[in-house]
Length: 125
Image 1 (cartoon, rainbow, N blue to C red):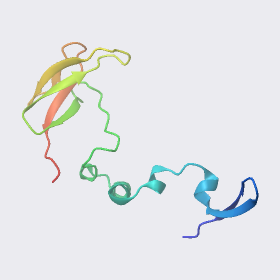
Image 2 (cartoon, rainbow, N blue to C red; image 1 turned 90 degrees about the horizontal axis):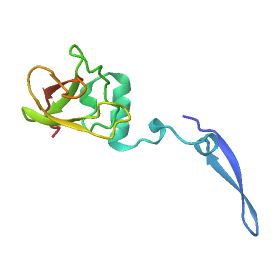
Image 3 (cartoon, rainbow, N blue to C red; image 1 turned 90 degrees about the vertical axis):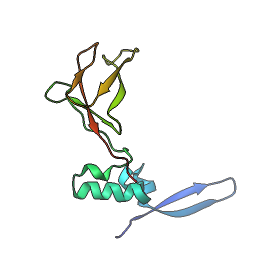
């Protein structure tokens, strides 16, 4: 891949120096794809090729959004058959409503009525 070279002049007290650098300095801040390395880069590249939930074992990609209705409840992964869930019922609310969520049918938040469903989750090894 050919990288364009841009020239920057760096001025100090006694001299002016010409510095050749790659285009990333000339074009601004690099994107996540440009600066990703290691495992993160592998996962990002694989996620572009195919859409698979197994490609995000460490949950650093944006989670899928749900409506919170009975037909499309918020999905809560758990390694046990119950889990405590906190619901911030309104966007600007400072209080959190805590309740137990059990495996099975979708359950409602006691305050706002949003639906949540507990699904089994296996830890990546």
